[in-house]
Image (cartoon, rainbow, N blue to C red; front, side, top):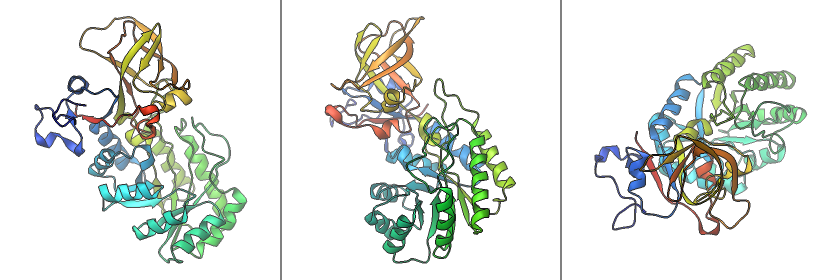
Length: 395
């Protein structure tokens, strides 16, 4: 906990009230946050200015409507930051996400772009004012029509399965999406029942080549020519990347330029264009502060691990940027460390190596950066290890 009588986060006395944004304890630096903390768990960090800057880039440069993919980080503070930054659309997948967005941003426009939904979710979404629904098969389309009582104001989005290939670190093919032949028939079927009809796709998470979007738009163009169907929108999905060690993508502007070029080449310029960034809006705007509980040679045992916010560091072997935080000086030489989390499970291990000063010791704090997306959202309470502490760093 942060020092306070109520065992809650103590607000730093050096900050005026208007500098405590989005309902979070706010500090000028990581050092301030650590020195104010007397708890035993990891600390999740949000950097509002970084999230605001990412949102501003998309709103100014992406050639269409920007939806935030809530799954990337559903923390209410993240939603508030994005709303304050001008994001007005949110991609939701469940009843809880719908209710969360409605409670935090009541005037937001929500899109239920999950291709497979429970009937209760569809009914709940329609009652909540959602009119955008994705589907990828005839059965799902039928569920949407039945559970909305054949509503005449639906904007339906057919989720396409893209041809295999591409540069994504996490390909999404195989689970969702209609194949070419099924898509032709589904477009023809949906056209007669949809007030508006669109297609959507996903090039894969952490896409490393902007040209993948042009390839996807080319596929859409050919499909529409075969189906001979008029559509109203194209949703290019997410996949917009964040820079991690060993995964350095081109500048984000290159992605926007390729998408804009593809829209022009294939004649989609007069359609509504939609994008669903998640990682790209909040990934670099969050980190985790983990305390070293023990050192064994080049192994560091932390109070946070793969059952917390470090899932991708373990399962995908991603080497997140790391920083050491301590009051005194650190060694000028570095060592590549392996991390172990606090649970009793042997899978709670992050191979790295993570480069840190050679004299890391018990009690040091390590900041694992670029965890604003998926890291914090995937954290569990397995084995009784969890963090309910999130702070904002204003610097």
